[in-house]
Image 1 (cartoon, rainbow over the protein chains, first blue to last red):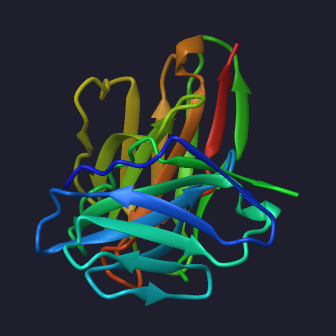
Image 2: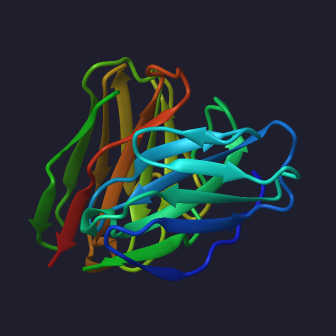
Length: 111
Length: 116
């Protein structure tokens, strides 16, 4: 799986959009970008994934650059419950292999 | 979505005892289950991969005789920490695949193990 780079930590005010960047300059053509988050003392939670088109679901939006070397996860209206560590993972879809969690970005949403 | 449960959610045991942690896929058949370990302020580290009906594959540095994994059915995998020591205290998380997306992974809520 390609390596990803994320900022160690970010802050966001409650109600504002949280934009979490991820660099994956060595991504291969058949690798997807996945985002998971882990709230303190809980198991990871799937958020969204995409190949090259932008994706949106009820939790977030995923914007992938045209060259696919970076992406941004957007939480449109962050709440205090969105405080978590966010992991950007690049992998072949449905590979059947374990997920390779990096250090992630610790997002703190403040009142 | 697919649901994965773990039991117990937290356990405290004495040094030298063994502890069993269960991971269940509640609404799908999990052909593969993964066990991760997470120390404080660190990321999840894969311990082993288990496929139903076969022996688990352990990551380098993980002692297979200490961390016994059984995946006897398509809905249950167990991790037994044998002769636990304080350094085994950690957050153990399982994930299962074989569900709606077939190979997408769904995570359990984790088990906090504290060895005194």
